[in-house]
Image (tube, rainbow, N blue to C red; front, side, top):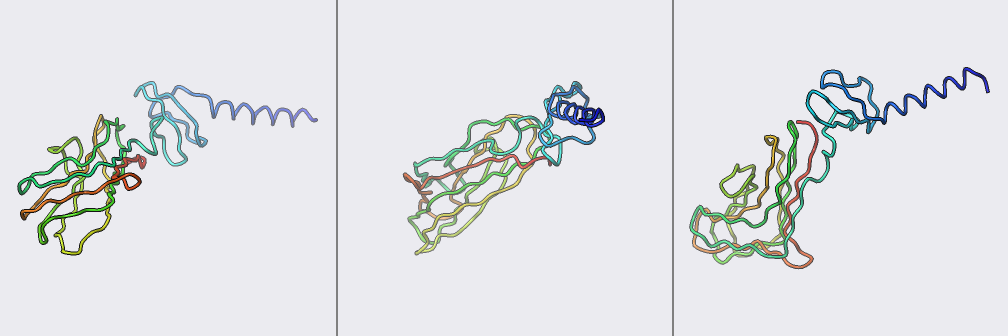
Length: 195
């Protein structure tokens, strides 16, 4: 083996070690040609960051942030405009500048009076928290089906919980978001990456 070949191999090995070792940098002196999975520590922001192939993201960000499901149905028959929590996540910490997707799904919804008007909402931080998205529908005599929807949102940094809520906007009956063993009601919160 030639000395030049050995030198080239050592250069490659050294670059690989540096790429996957954790360097201390600042948020303005990040590596300009990072490798997928490369980690750095930003001394000025006090953050451990990783290169995901597109951007530097806080270590541990990405993928599923929270998931909750239940086999317990949620029924509302409260007065017009009142809403109840059908399901909520545990608090999750959202880093600054992240975009998330909240997806909700339920097996079936059942009602007692045809023609009533209902709303189903995704909220942040409780029944009085920010409404992120909603669907509104009128009940029909033959209506029975599972449903779901999602929203994409850029929250403020910090700890948040996400809620699936249901309420009556008009009418006199009740609405049940059904759930059972094997047919669960679900809420999923995912980190989509930088906003």
